[in-house]
Amino acid sequence: MRKIGVLLSVAILLFPAFVSADCADLGRFTNWYLEASYTIIFYDGQTPLARVEIPYCEITPLSTIRLINSYVCDSDQIMVDGVACLILTVTVLY
Image (cartoon, rainbow, N blue to C red):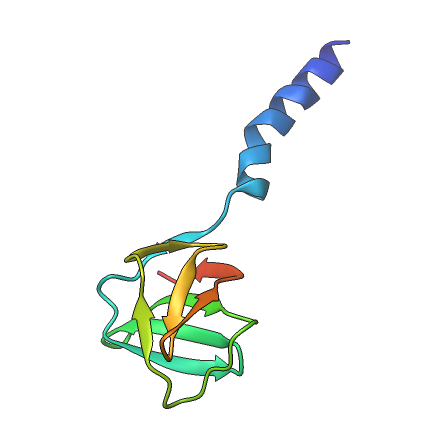
């Protein structure tokens, strides 16, 4: 019975790490790079800030990217060429 209690305690402590969304403060980004057709890496100068996957919008190297909020998380929106696009995942790189 004690083993079950210990395992349950560990699971409760680790569970938020598996279900929590990654978020990144992109308010200081100065440029971005199109890594793949739906993946952007945001930079502050030469420092990568985050990798953002936006699978439902067409992005080109000449696209205009505008943040709706400076702090973005999975399932937030971002403006690509004047169209609000859903962010699938945000991976922090700093």
